[in-house]
Length: 95
Image 1 (cartoon, helix red, strand yellow):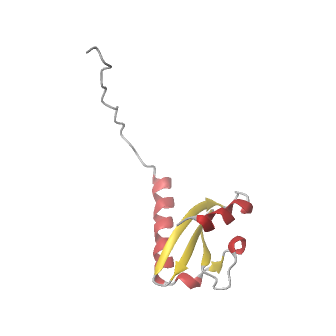
Image 2: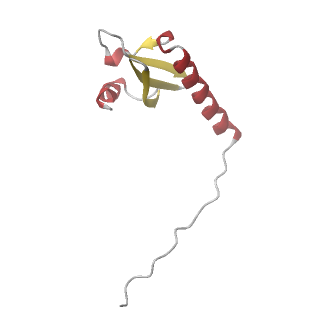
Image 3: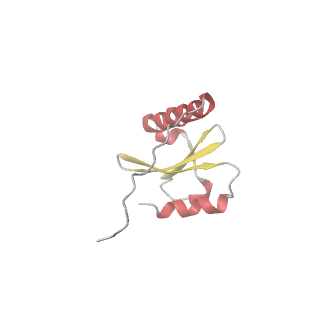
């Protein structure tokens, strides 16, 4: 049945630089702070609501956009500050 031969995907060794690890650690520390006190951070100006459920935390050069509902926090996106603010409104549609 001369079909195509299946090939095993090549695996790569991954190394994380110290700088990249520090950025990752900072992001996770900020997410821990969000979990402990979600309303300590500013409302996201691009996604305003009466209940102020969309918030924005700053971590280094990144915005962590999240939604607070009852007892749940949803991280909607981590966006570099240099990105246009108009795209942040699309995060509202994330379930």
